[in-house]
Amino acid sequence: MGDAARAWNGEQVRTWLARRCEAAKLDQAAADRRGYEARHDYDQAAAEEWVCRALNDAAWTSEQAAFAGRIKQLAGQDDYAVTGIHDDARFERHVRSHLRKLARMTRTNDGFDKLLRYQ
Image (cartoon, rainbow, N blue to C red; front, side):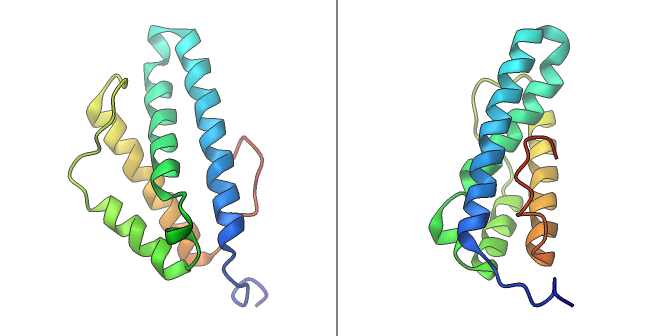
């Protein structure tokens, strides 16, 4: 009952997105150092960073409905322009999976309080 009554906290969502963006940058650097066999990990981290950057704006995060609408808008795009990735299809698949994860978190208003690097 307490979870359903919890109010949307835009500042907490922005903090969560900023921390996930930083974690994704570190994951990209680690995958880059591992080389060829870590291309998948690099694309996955790049997708998470792209999603967090696209959503981390006060205009979207201040209200739950606006944030959900922005996620839906991004999920409806045909392609995502980014440079430096290894496989476009894999990158887009990971972007969509991160958007689905955020849509679930937004719908339930749960998970934005978990600020540890590894989720």
